Length: 275
Image (spheres, rainbow, N blue to C red):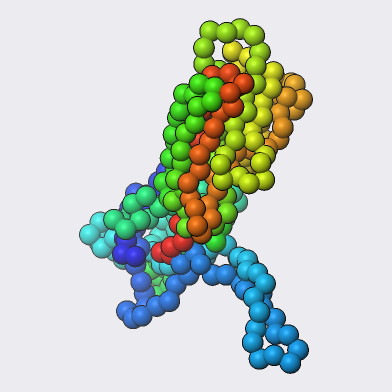
């Protein structure tokens, strides 16, 4: 990837008069690209062939790169203690992951959830830049977050094609709102053609004023207006967008005995790439 700038938690590196650079000689480098998997194999007694029985990610994506002053914005290539402090206050924090996006054509719609550690790069006793170590929340990156909304009648359906590079499933952030003029309570039952475990989303006691939010990644359900009886009316099976090697097509169907509703899915497809 070629980039001289990045955005982190709403601010850009260039806002500080800095750019991505290198203090080493140019050359070939090998970088992590979000596909570092540990494979489990074993060799049966008396055989020279190894058998495969699984694979898993052992660590999240990490990377190391350097930053320096933009030469066209300053007369001095060196950083003052105040400038170092401002950069590390922005980047090196303990309040959790923040969104990181590199400003380049190739990574226009790609981001990581990241934290940083930092080391000073000194030249003849003066600080010329910082070496940043990037730590992320996953072994891979994410594509730009997308939101899709559908208005469904009982028996209606909608289609999602999962573009993720990783097989498995993603829990989207879901909002559901009653549609129509009825005032009595009803239910929402939403199933996915790809979910062969046959665990549909099931909400009962749903009323015309309810807006339900389902944070599947955190396994949290909330409502507006606030309700204290949600746990008694929810099956605790959150909708999943599923991806296998053979199929990426998810068809979600609202059961015929459900109430009409508006449903929104917000999610970020997975992409295996490096920086």
